[in-house]
Amino acid sequence: MAEVKLENISKHYGEHRVIENLNITVKEGECFTFLGPSGCGKTVILRLIAGFERPTNGEIFIGSSLVSSAEQKIHLPPEERKIGVVFQDYAVWPHKTVYENVIYPLKIQRIDKNEAKQRTMQAITQVGLKGLEKRLPYQLSGGQQQRVALARALVSKPEIMLLDEPLNNLDAKLREEMRFEIKELQREIGVTILYVTHDQEVALAISDRIAIFDHTGHVRQIGAPREIYEKPADKYVFNFMGVSNFIPLEIKNGATIIEDSNIPVALQPPTGKKEALRMLAACRPFDIELTRENTGMKGEVKRVTFLGATMDYRINLGEKELRIQQDTQEALQNNLLFKEGEDCFLKFHNVAWFESQSVEMGVS
Image (tube, rainbow, N blue to C red; front, top):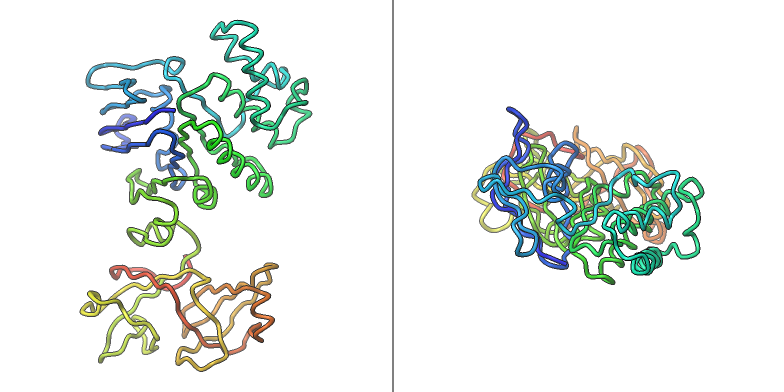
């Protein structure tokens, strides 16, 4: 395993600036995720680290080795960077067996036959495919094909693993299984992992740290999953990390009301923000409690959706709409299942506060 350092990295395609002055250090043995919307440059960064692309400016270090430098005109080819790469589409050879797919990189490197066989079987075992080494890809499930790609990346004993949306083509159940297997594999072998995804759940589940990118390729926040989820740096990060309610508020005659209305809210801005006349309150669907008790904040149930363990509500607050979710079993036990058109009252928990912006109140 090795540390990966990006120093002042920029990547331009003609006039199009994908990445500009990016500085990130991935610690040795860490699972670090680049998380952001499609087109923000996540995959380009991975390709720069792998050596498939050259940076326009800046330097890339893997461990103590300078592998790319635009200024010094240094560019180490991918096969000399001690990396393993797993792509979104698996990229396994359809005419080769599991064993033949996994051993392929060692044949290219001309590794001794006995050592190559031992390392191949070890990698196949590590990803849970022992006994399937003679099967062709069409005889495997999507999850098993992805394991073949992982084993092929592991067999060369890389210092870092680069994973580019490797779970995208799997169904929901397989995605959940594979994300935990990837994390367990990382703990077992101790390799440094750089993971690219736009899936917040995967990022939260497997990462030691996450870098949140916006659509322009700029990093908005870097931190541990819990830190990013509970203490987002700004509205963009809060919104990107899950379903969000945003409520633009203003203080009028000493009362906190929904902006451009006379609807009072039982929300008090934190110390230090009370002097502001306009603010933006943000919360998750589970951070609003529906109750039949008169809390002074009345809403009307617009839509009810049963999601099994969760009840999902759309609530009208005057002319505005909020999304609220509650535990189904808890709602049943406490007589808190609401019907469409029914009145309800709202209690807010864990509200985040941001500077007021020109946004429509509601679900984002």
